Image (cartoon, rainbow, N blue to C red; front, side):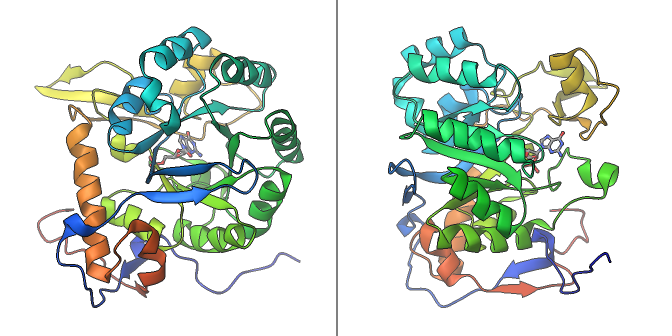
Length: 347
Ligand code: 5GP
């Protein structure tokens, strides 16, 4: 018989972080860098736990060059050529500890991944990314990559439940990427009816991962810096961001002028736009699970990222956390019926 889970699962929009007494005198005292040592690779990473998504318009070399200056990570999209990687690595060696090389599980992906990792030995971070991380073939692929690259840090996803998080870690992932359907240009939930509310997914999967000395990335669904703070408060070790970084100079695509407005196009990795671009159309057996939107052009990404980092420092001061790593220890969520005052429009 089909089962119903009756306890309410929550999204970022359903909660606020309760303020707490604080000994911090200024936002400047907050340390946003996290340090973590990975279960399998045994490597230690130190950086700000935000990650530009590996969507093709977001996870660009240009994005990595800018974000890396601030200690922020970029998952480089898998459509970049090997020559592109070579050039990037030669010209920007200081960025290499803040980027991941991405792989799908299709034919040819393993070879491409191996070629890039052999060419660029300083590159230590692999992201294996599929829309649905529940398939046995995905687990097998993680095992294969772990076997071939025992000392590389492997992140893998997406999933949204505790048992599979554990399974992926045991298969060789150091970090599991969490998020089925929360993304700003994702339509999986409407197309398939499948998903899991993101805040609860992060809470449950982070707990499962941490008991195995694994880590999680909260992927998707952050519409403002407050949501990023909630993800970190829920135990996410990294937060992956797409939409909030879209529309900038560092994103792929030209600026379009229409009715006096400057726009950029942003689309899901499973949108018709992406499938037409990379696969020459939508295959007959599959559905479109992403949308294409036109958004206002926002210029350089630097002010946006600085604003986000300022917001996170402020969250920490409101709850008395001297570092972003202390945030989950200081976080108490309050369930809310209304989170923002929208009388003058969305803030
Ligand atoms: P955002 O920060 O924009 O809310 O979410 C970004 C995340 O949405 C990405 O990192 C990726 O996991 C997910 N995503 C991107 N494109 C698609 C898509 O076309 N379909 C689905 N289901 N998810 C997508």
